[in-house]
Amino acid sequence: MFSYEFMRNAFAAGTIIAIICGIMGVFVIARNMSFLTHTLSEIGFSGAAFGVFAGWAPLNGMLLFTVVSSVIVGQLSARSERREAATSAISALFIGLGILFLSLANKNASYATSILFGSVIGISASDVQQMLWLSLLVLVVIFVIYRFLKFDSFDHTGARVKGLWTNVLSITFLVLLALSVSVAAQIVGSLLIFILLTLPAATAKYFAHTVGGMMLLAIALALFGVWSGLVFSYLTNYPVSFFIAAIEAIFYFIALGWQRLQTAG
Image (cartoon, rainbow, N blue to C red; front, side, top):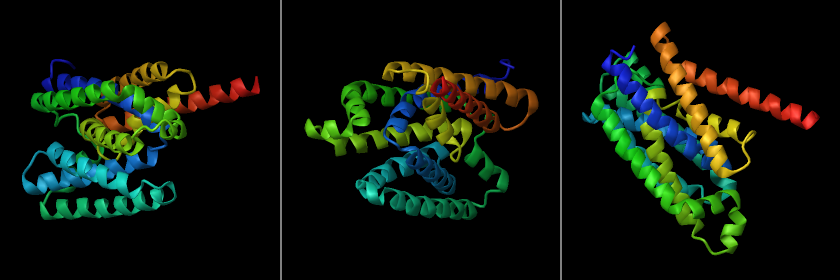
């Protein structure tokens, strides 16, 4: 398996993605942004389609669209009562734009499928390098703002009372989330990226009781899901995103069962 360059690249990319998603996912769950993550993934699809239409690498198109739109979404959804309506409207708009750009680019259905659901074969060494630099950027920013972001994510009211710039933190986090979506979509695709950004962290919160513990467990679950998914995809020739989604969903349902047993006990 590792004699093939594309599999080595896929495992390297998958490792990077799992680490980023494990860390970012904890804050996504804490800030109740699962739906917004799904919206950014759809915006990523539109960006990738625009990149194809413009003759760019799909990742560059995703970066452009997700980063710019994350700031717009952050402004439109600043008030909780209009958050879902704003994200739904933006999601619908960008799905339509993605279909339009693919149509204008004259790409076939298989190319659209690779954007939507990922492609192991399409990952090159240069893609891995670009993903690594983007991931390092995300990790550095998270390290710098970690204490403030943790405070705002787990005690937003307290953070506002203390005078933290919660709006700046929110938009900064959304930009980091946009970068994470663009990076991770290379493996699982733009429409399934929310799986890795939500399920491992959502599972981890039932077993870990500190933020650091949640991050470590979420990373471990994401790594297991990505690595296992790649192996099963290689052996069966079925889409890697299916296996990753199934594995992470199984872990989540096990966590729910464990929580019910603990509550009943």
